[in-house]
Length: 82
Image (cartoon, rainbow, N blue to C red; front, side):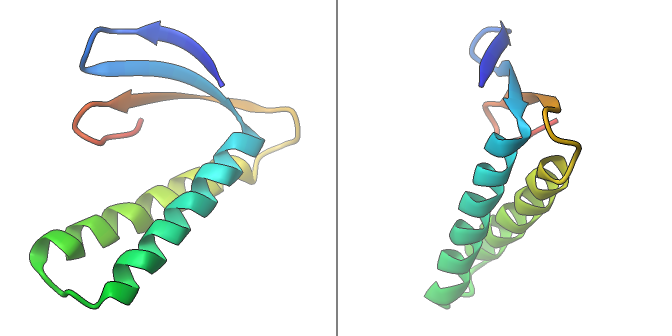
C-alpha cells in the first residue's frame, strides 16, 4: 500500500496492489459472515452486513484484475470507498 494523498481528516488516497485487494475482500467476507452468524437482525446490523458484502464485492473485483495492476482507492472517514 502506498499513501498518495492525505486530504486532511476526511479522506485518504492510497494505492493498493491487487494482492492487498484480495486480502481486504477476504476480511470483508469474514466480517459479513460474523455479522450474519450473530443473528441480531436489528437495522444497524443489517446495514453493516450490507456494507461488508458490498465492500467484499468491490475489493474482489479489483483483486481479479491483471497481475501487477494497482488500484487507487479513496477512503473516507464516514466509511465510503471510491
